[in-house]
Image (cartoon, rainbow, N blue to C red; front, side, top):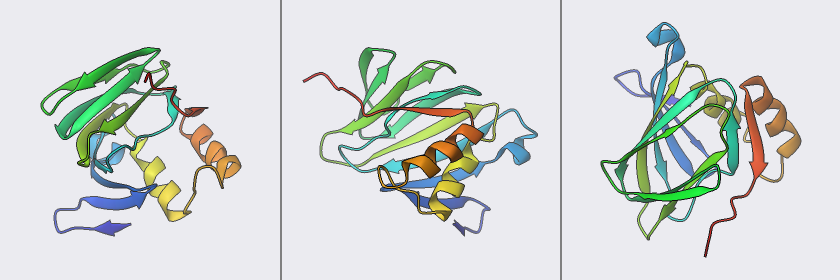
Length: 149
């Protein structure tokens, strides 16, 4: 993990660059904020946050979100609310990387990326260790997304 002059923390994990801009400690607990620069065609596996609600705001690129079986396209300037306990994922569509801002409440989940990157945990190579780490953050992986064709 590296730090910049303004205190922003940056990590690279699974092809995505994360800039953690507000930590749980900095907000006093209610939220964590990070920006993601995601390669074209990429996104996380389907997962569930059991501890926090999430809002993702698309800054650049075209995104497709999958939320509990429904898909929706989101262009720059659009936001999606992803409630805790509901399976979801996204992918960057098109040929350009996507950039998004994620706000999670309560905060704390932003540390997951710091720990996963520091341990160089890879999917599928390190799934047992990744699942153990995820469990500590109330995160459950459900597998790859079955995107409609």
